[in-house]
Length: 212
Image (cartoon, rainbow, N blue to C red; front, side, top):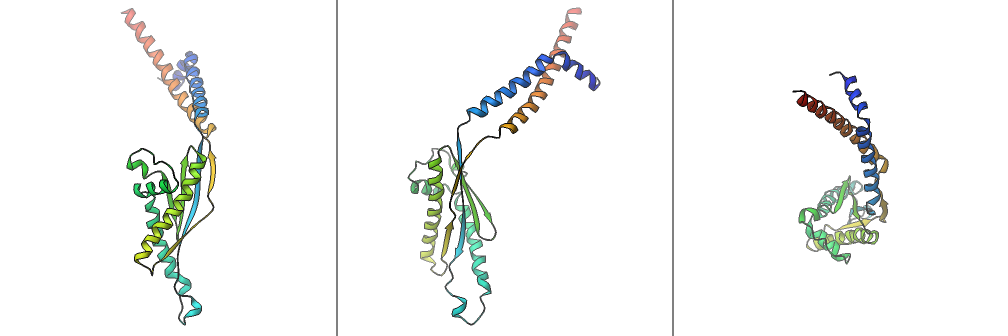
């Protein structure tokens, strides 16, 4: 069967074809509008290693604290992985005075998104349906990270790190309506075409059965 014959069949059952597309678009509009509000809280953490020596205090070159920067970078990897720990996530919720979600540990480890950037920067974000909760959690996260760092510093006083937090930003996230409409339209075209061809096929089969 040639391509134009397929188009003829689809045109023959245009009500089925366009009906599916319209239903898909309307369903997408309703689904998108019914989505609950969501807020994204984000901040940036920078890990700094405190230097016990200053260049002005010694006669040899410190290479602009190169080794401190390298050490901070390695330690920032540890901090980034803490966000995947259910135990640390629990501490963050406790610090924010919020109830820990009743979900699996696997889901707890995915609540925060922490992306490490060179040399020692971590971009942290969290999504929530409540704006105040999102802000509390992102602030509590920085506090908990510093507390954990201080606990480690008690046993290793020569390696003390400071975690600097940028002012968090909380914004409302909205679904991409036009992208959703585009996807639903494409899906509607495909499904509509398949249904139109299926209707034609089964009608032809019914006629053949009756004739026999």
